[in-house]
Length: 311
Length: 262
Image 1 (cartoon, each protein chain N blue to C red):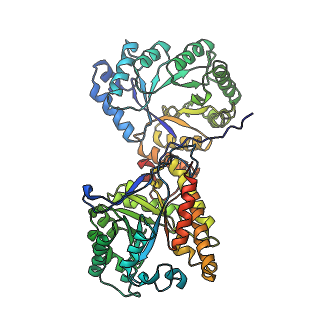
Image 2: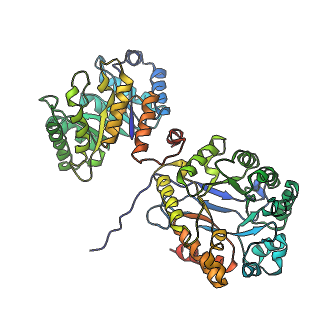
Image 3: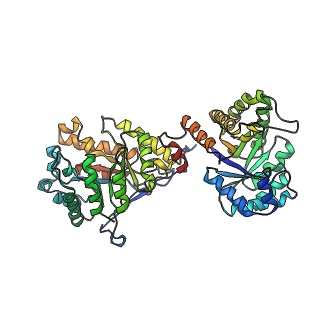
């Protein structure tokens, strides 16, 4: 007798988020990227629609990163010394389809770049590269509240994803995102209750739930990966059961976590593997956007995604 | 929790007069108000005083489905009235209700199958209201067995243990709550469970508090559905909180608002 698969049917659906706007939508991107929209748990193709693959974004900074592994930096060659050149290399040589830009240079301890200069950097970057952008501040709340409104405005109508809103600092960034036509990253500290609360707080300000991407905060392999996995799984099960307040796609900052692991610092090969394994695990827990650092790890993960979705 | 709004009922003088005067606006306002307060389905009952219940039921169905696509719960003890409602319905329907009597089951299970309707079965028969848990489970099992034999899906069957007013049958309350729990194990897949909540406080002066306390206890016993007044905000808040405590929804500080965004 043939084995019958037990299939679940879900009433809920994850929201679809489009990143980037082309000319006809008053933007200037050459391509757009769509994430989310699934009505099934990750990779269970027979249970429901999975219209969009997970996507990988290359991580670039607006300054030369000071705490990155030397061999990780050297993967980008000379261009790492010029953030605009670095970004262009990601697109032209490594065929990045999305870039994640961290405005680290605005951080008081990393150069304290002015909001105006940060905005100018984004305007120039938008001229130089034509892929959709994900942009976050430096993580210093006070400074980010000054920088991100100008950065958001500089990218008005380009339909970026802008971050990060956190439970005790979200109003300024939500207002900017709302005004400039972007989507938002809602970041919670591996805590599903806060993730849900933050989504409600954001939507109460008038930004539709469909313009939120959740950053559940992850840990790398060996550093809490399973914990993040279980939070994502729980959120996804609730969302698919009909809880719209948790039905946002996930963004996972894989690179920053994987390269912090002491194992990744040991040798470059091990670092690449650490980033690859961390990313591929999160694909299986429902990640829609993976932000990664090493081109080789990105290549491996992209191939893995292609294999999974070949059907 | 699957919530059936109870307010369109000819027992209420306002509704009875709206029905007799064919005042669509009042009925439609009651329908939309209940939906906005969380009703998933609307109960329609033209009341015992209606001189022409067959025509009235069809009119109620047409009037309500002009403004909402929510399912309609056709509420009458007369199968002919229910059939008129089924004929007029474009929305999904629930038949409210059959007893455990064979002659009722014959007609209403056939109608439910013919119109692809869900069905409420109440644990009662011509001999009267059950007096203990065993009688309730026996009557419920009779209804389940009939549905199984006649190929009506048990998942679409809602079993009602009959909630009696507390000022009349205080000693039966524990049995009623236990019956809700027991009904779920009558068959696999399980039938659904339902109560007509407001009956519990019929004739009492502290109605809302009694209603919401009983509902909480019923939810803890596995209740799937209730016919209630969704416009009672304290009742709805209590229900949402009870389900939260049972881990049916994920907690957050704004869980009441989150539930209502669903």
